[in-house]
Image (tube, rainbow, N blue to C red; front, side, top):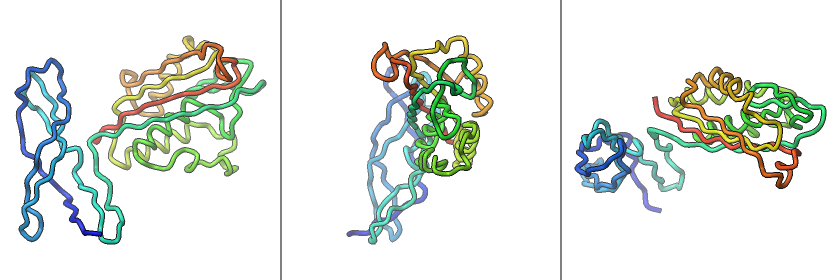
Length: 241
């Protein structure tokens, strides 16, 4: 297998948007980039340039990667790209059983059923954690906090969120925004949404303007619609500090 060279830094040329677009953001533009490699060889590659545009004038510009990840002769991968932003998705589902607490977003919700889980079964916080870990390309919540470890028996899911946030900051990122959807037939979450968002803001160190929580029923279909389970999806955008 042929060897490649990894370039740890790459300065892209400035450019100006000449398109009469109506939005404040231009889509990635693939441009040829010419530069000198070690040994004096001239190399041309094509890479995306993301340009933030205001009134058709470029105000900032970043490459989609500052490190070109390549393969060596031995086939091992070089370090991954340091990206200006990362997107992660989390999903979780738990069975609902009688006489258990129903905790969503760190808030105890009055109901005749609760989540059957090793920890406190907070389906929202679990998928928030997985979304952050996924964006960072890290192992998921089940690997970091396995249900086979008695240490996590009955643990508050806020512990998992705080660790995910620590890892996010350690990697040099901060939360851009979070969008979550809870799926459950009962109970109605509208009366509790403000308390859930307030608690999430405290755990994530984020302003409420970048958090969105939605709740949907499952139209009485399958276990979700029959009040036998609860699920949640979360998408996060992480921005490089």
